[in-house]
Length: 406
Image (tube, rainbow, N blue to C red; front, side, top):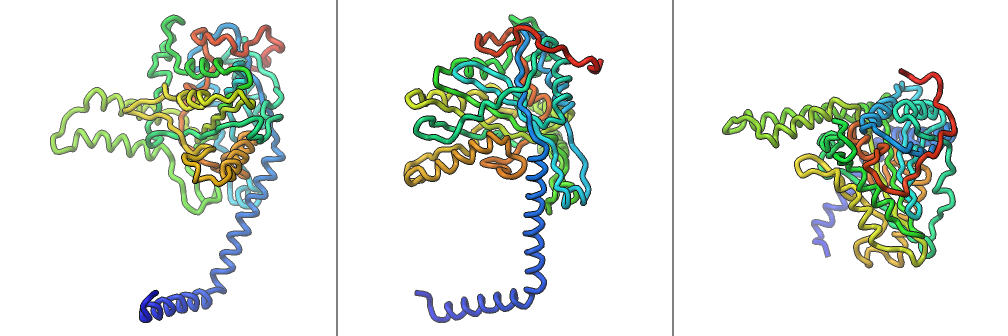
């Protein structure tokens, strides 16, 4: 029981606070209501724009031979760096949004398939870029593989997770350049980190599926004018330049100034190279599902480890963000919380929703990967990828557009 003097003081404090709020209610109540209504309007208009823009899922079948390094995918990604420019009318009245894309790696009972999801207005751009960089590739509109999948924890249990970076996103992951693929080595000497993912996907057994989804959109400095945010979001390159300066100052302006070690110099060089590339805001989701009786926890282990080869102790890497289950049984009474998470996760995956409503930043926050990093984790592999179940083109069904850039 509280002492009488303390109780009186508390009551007096709440009374004065309530009186103050009431006195200024004519000012703050309209402002709060206006803010709520504005937020609802923007959500409504953005949802309307997303629905109107539509979507298309393109499947990419690999040619029999690919002798291109992931630099080819970098060039494709550069063409997808669509920043968009808004003004107050477009942002607050029309609810304009920045375009986003997804790269998807899918294994259905061991058959590995490559997909690109986009708005229809970008379809021609994507197809022309893939045709120009990967001669012999086959691209066609595919039926959405997620269409017939619904939340059914009894007959089709699944486990899903988001990935995040181990360090600040100004630090790059291990890329194809670090593996020497930029030098176009002979096939027998190639070390492609993506082959580990493909081999894992190809090992999936009957009744099992693995879905990997990489969502990305162009990164830019966001202000109140063009993204309806009250707090300005700084440009990623500014943070990167600050980190480089910090690293240089640590060795040159410390108590005992010295030249950087080889390891320190490599980190600084990696940061500088990273800042020279186009940056994207990224989210990565992964799912393992299986029919009743086929569910094997080793599939979850493989999914967790599928991105480990991109990690470096001195630079960056991937680790798990929030996932669909819970660590301890008492955290989830009668599986209600897990079922709710699973439904949201599955719906967000099927809608490719992350940057905007209805599942904005679900279970994760976006991080930055540049074109080199994105091209490392998703590109069309060469012969070094010996996975026999890769979906490949037998013969071209349509010729590339005649107006391809030279």
